Length: 322
Image (cartoon, rainbow, N blue to C red; front, side, top):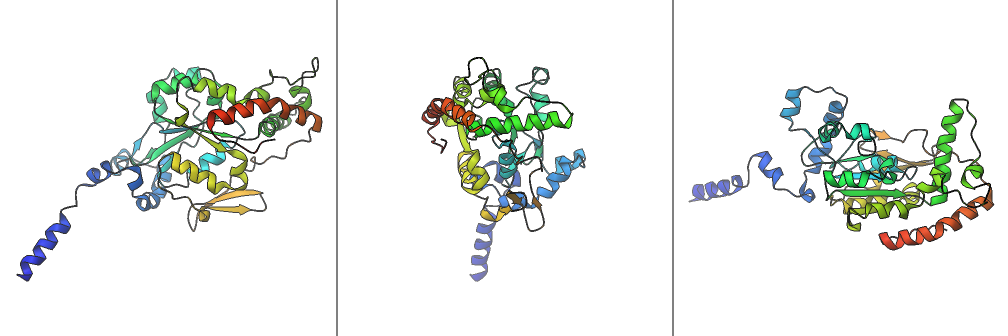
């Protein structure tokens, strides 16, 4: 009798076991085997470097997937920091380089298969994310992304518009200085010398009028498919912002304070993937901004204010901007 009972128990324990593909295929993202994915990060890293044979790719069931989420902007809003921080999650795989598929006519003409092959290898249970901040302000991009995937999730990281415009200027200025070229002061570019009003023809100013660009995207995607990330808060208090993104992407919560540590020397948070692997953003991040005439800052903030209010209304997220 005891022998029969043990056989029944043994049979019951064996019943749930099925081929791996079947188990994974039935799982939702909330049931992703995160520990296994975390363990295999090193293998994916080797594949990203090109150190993989076709047999290894087949053996490990690796694929190059189209992104299920895209960080579409905003330039100098913190897109690189957001992408690197989301890559802490074992269910996320990032495209390391900006692909510029949807905003570049030459690249777009190469077709969707070319785009897919630019994506990193991943496991079927992971989601691929890419970022190209030019997408947000480029007129043709919303329709092109819609044609690829009308249900894709879109991330927009924004900073206080005047600060973002000055950061934009600072990056261009640094590039000019490296080439020993002169460049106008920010005040001369941001303010029209003839009218003494804000110069909306200056790209750094135009990019910061977030609501104008968002309205174009809303012709194709409902607001529920967008998530607004507070880029200023991501700098000072990243974890709550990342947890909101995890929820938006329907990912099980996995990023914790352990993964983020403040580097006093660099002045911002660095990333801890595990006990042996840490990473800080490139030294070009966190550039010191030039001093700007306070009256120009005041004029810009007054100019952006009504656009900001409309942005809050459309997105449902109010940010602490002056």
